[in-house]
Length: 325
Ligand SMILES: Nc1ncnc2c1ncn2[C@@H]1O[C@H](COP(=O)(O)OP(=O)(O)O)[C@@H](O)[C@H]1O
Ligand SMILES: Cc1ncc(C[n+]2csc(CCOP(=O)(O)OP(=O)(O)O)c2C)c(N)n1
Ligand SMILES: [Mg+2]
Ligand SMILES: [Mg+2]
Ligand SMILES: [Mg+2]
Figure 1 (cartoon, rainbow, N blue to C red):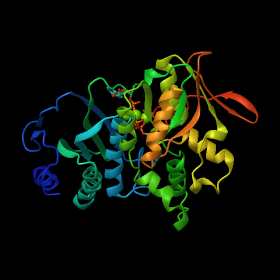
Figure 2: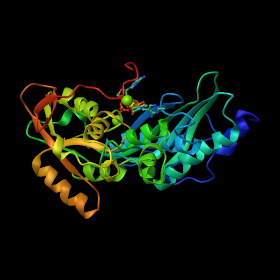
Figure 3: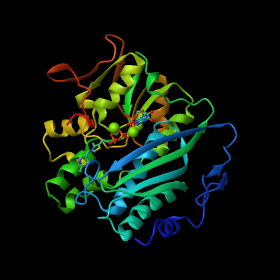
């Protein structure tokens, strides 16, 4: 690596897509003009080598893709349109300049699909593992609040896609079981696509909807809705859609990945039956998936249950947890 200034020059975009951008990379900070009648939405997620990826599980371009995708997924869970992103990267000596460029290429090609502009960041060296933090900024129409606390008794619980593929992909990568037929599972882990379009459809309904993206696993995300909403949630085992790519694994393994695997980046939420019917119709028209998997109940607060042929049991708030291993 020559020096950080040369590196920054190389990763600076030659053009931008958001007309609201006034000043991007190159000064002390970026400036943009918020669009009328909309509110700003912002979030940040980090990927650390050894925790979120290893050299064996992900290529540099995939690390870049996924770091941005995980953030876009949080904007999707707020129903927002993504506009800008910033990247902080802490670089150990073991990563060369080509690999770092590939990380940015991975981000860039995903960013292009949503016309999201890179407008800043920070570059530092470290003796620790590689750490990439991405901040994304977006907008949502005034007053749209797809909040975790919005669930109410009687609501339908839904998800916008199948779950468990990413965890299955990770398991195959870690156990070196790589054949052509598992490629979709590897892709689910390495290059997940955020459900921006789904989030925008949900925002467009202008109804009360509780929403969360699935980063830590369905069980954990449903608790994150149940707790602030002070409701309980019951899902049905038989209603959880099983990915065709998971069919060859046994039912217990499938369920474990679906409930606790995480990094699916699909959306999970609740809405009234009436809103859900409207949702279903719009998703169908756009050829997008949505599945009803359960109901919100009012009994005891903040429990999540699953029912199957053996009856009903409580689901722990288990899933990926950085401080419990
Ligand atoms: N270190 C931190 N400092 C400040 N806020 C944080 C920090 N970590 C997480 N948060 C905030 O806590 C909330 C939950 O974060 P998190 O569980 O990471 O959500 P998600 O799974 O959607 O990424 C978010 O509002 C996030 O911005
Ligand atoms: C090598 C490796 N081991 C384990 C995992 C699994 N994993 C790491 S972090 C994580 C959860 C999601 O990351 P987090 O930082 O909690 O994102 P957030 O919930 O803030 O979006 C999972 C399932 C992985 N991706 N790679
Ligand atoms: Mg987070
Ligand atoms: Mg989230
Ligand atoms: Mg998490």
